Length: 371
Image 1 (spheres, rainbow, N blue to C red):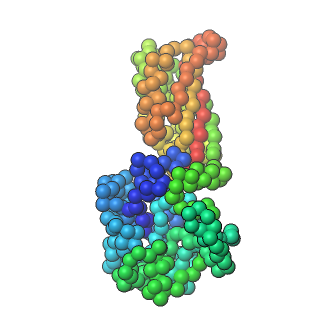
Image 2: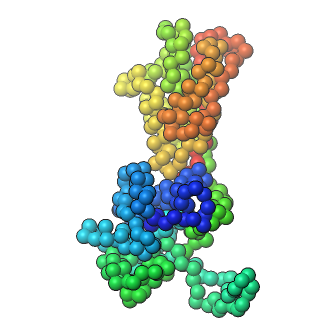
Image 3: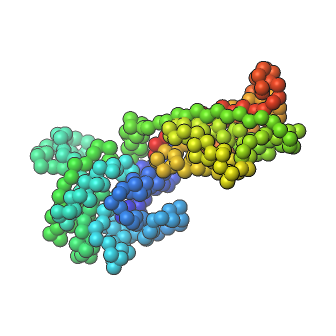
């Protein structure tokens, strides 16, 4: 259960913090993905503010529940929605902790094999002060103190009964559980699993993400010769010409190069390995089939395409008038903004087969970034 019904006003911005961008993606999207990847999670419930229930349309694989006025009321609403569904264990997580690791999730689930409650925590090591009006008024012994994190895991029936019996106002679900006599085991938390509360927390999270960012770069190259026809296919756009490109598929030289660049970044060979030209089923196939396949493989490996740079080498046809349409078409197929697609064209100064007007060559570079 991911609790996302809060308004997050301290984070600033025009929308609640869970809908703000973190390194190019919404906070809630990153949090959801962390649990989608978790091997021990079978179902996800997203608790939303009543005025934001329409956002659930973006998550068809997630059950959306209307939250309450307080965090504990929202958690109870989510638990009540699961009552009678056969759920045995539940993890309750703050949507504003998008960098939770698979290790923490697994550790909490494992701890529930021996106890009715478990949660990640970090031992307090800094000196603690009490203060008032900007002045230090005293100190606090830090021995035995821990900083609480989520996800907090529980036996479902036990935590549901605990919430039903609680009077409200709890800081977190561990407090509710302990009030009902449920023992809660601690597993090691991580500094990376921070809760986004203020604008500076977003900056810190991006620094943490950058320190572990996995970036892959791949190159693609393709050539196709001219043959009879009245247009050439370039990245899904039919460009008028007195000849066409020949090939086993639709001979879209630009899209083939981009596809190979993505496959190269994944170390998965080239188009020929995935769609052999000797196989008659691919004859005449539109090349977006190949490109979508490569993008799907990237997504399966938890990568998204950061940008693509494509250079088309030919004397004719002239590419410039169609470059914007080509970029727009590629962006649509790849699910990217058009400003992440670079389309360039050059001649070979009448040298080689492209200079003699015998065909078109394409060179592409693609960047993949792990989500």
